[in-house]
Image (cartoon, rainbow, N blue to C red):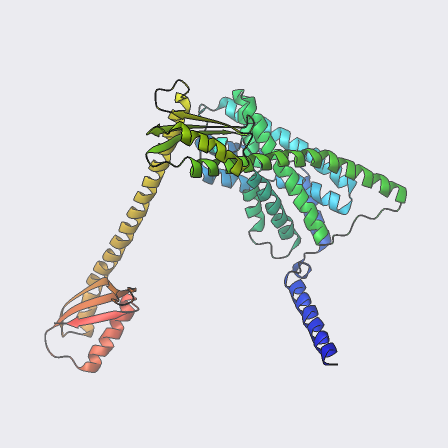
Length: 457
């Protein structure tokens, strides 16, 4: 009997815990009216008039941001961009079996993509600034992180659209998933005749679009949206077949490309780990590295004390520990080697110089900010001292001189620090203890100080 009671209590605890967790993560409590959500996404799919002009202007703004390498301008363009509409519509239509919405989303997606590329191509054909900036280069080679960002950003977006407390999630999802910059970079590739930039950027845009759509579909099914009901069951089956065909045509290439991205990412991570651990010599430094997944090759340039053939053999043998057995390793030593790529070396030196300069500038900015804060604190108390002198004449005529300053005190045992306001004062005559206490409280309030030390000469 006791065992049965204990088992019963245990089951009751498990059921209660399950219900608590389920209630804690339940999305349906704050779910918006389903029809309003569907209508909201459906309206975002249609690109006519206002939506179209907003898209064109947003593309121009994003292209300008990429052209002048301004992250803030790019973020602003992504905030006003309506590009998420057709992509979320695609995922919603699959989730609720709405073939008409699927067709409309697909048409709008093609239209917005075409207009965006034409607009950015036009801008980059006319702009006098032709230098390739880092913000442009960042949109030419997608990684597995871009896939994950698109997936989780899309999930956050559909959940935010479907709930009452939308907050700033939707703008944040638009920024994180970054649909506009790849399209602008594709336009830059066409304008400059660089097909690799165009293909790389369009590749990133396609991957982002597919995984945002996938996330929208998962969100719709997770929140149990009602599927579209058909009177004609034969028509319903036909629609389902069309949807499955479209999904397969779209998803299969995306998953294949994503698999390639994952392999490339893991290869680069393993190669960088290999270089960091196995080519770390006391008097020799790696000044350049070229990791090529397509050619399955790692190429490094070393300067300093020349490493022996025995060490080189050991390094080659270590490749298998990083799952790089089939990878070709080329080690270039010495500055006079015929195999030394001076262009690559120059790029590496410039990259290191840029990083060091950025770090130095950041340190200087922090130092300037700290000095400004100290100067502001000093100026505040200097101004306050001048302001309260006339008040002392009226309230406490016994006071002859007064000065205020802020100090940092250190506790010797614990090394804790604290900020304290120190008031140095000289009196003409005697002052009653209660008046002294009242004056100190008045000074503490007047100076906005939490702690104050009054010193009377």
